[in-house]
Amino acid sequence: MNLKVILIGGLITVLIIAGAIVVMSRAPNAVKLEKSDSGQFFTDHASYDWGEIDYGGGVANHVFEIKNSGSKPLKLANVKTSCMCTTAKLIVKSGNSPIFRMHQVSDWQGTLEPGETAQLEVNFDPTFHGPSGTGPIERIISVETSDPAKSNIEFNLKGVVIKNG
Image (cartoon, rainbow, N blue to C red; front, side, top):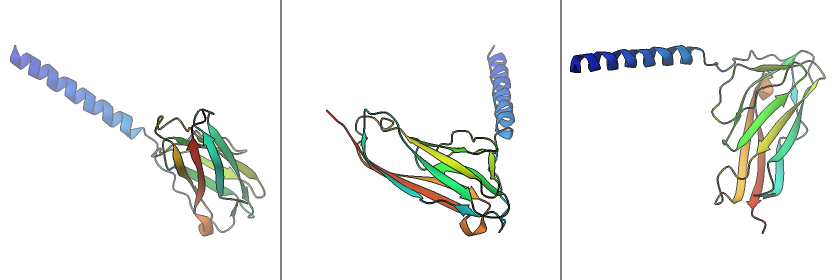
């Protein structure tokens, strides 16, 4: 009887490991962007101050505009946030990105043609860290580009989470 339990347990373990290998092999990889002098990243601002953010006031958001000021396509990929309480999404003509969070890896890649603009939509949930999560916050969104002069752009956001009432 004990040998039968051990064999069944061993078989289940092997099946779980095999399933994990299959799932992990399907996970997306980070995009490797080829750098090109022709696509040029531009934004009129890379930082934003929300000021006071009401804990019970819902999600705070901000949109950064990105432009390709070069003569060839500009690639955007590998978006990351500095905290799970913050999400980011790129809205581009060639197709919107998924919603990105901290530690997320995606094979998504967006393209901006010369003169085209995109929006980096950032959302911060002030309730994510619970009722004690008040006070100053600083968050960073990073975006990789194909522009060798600006290959990794950081957008900085800050504010102060407060409780009204």
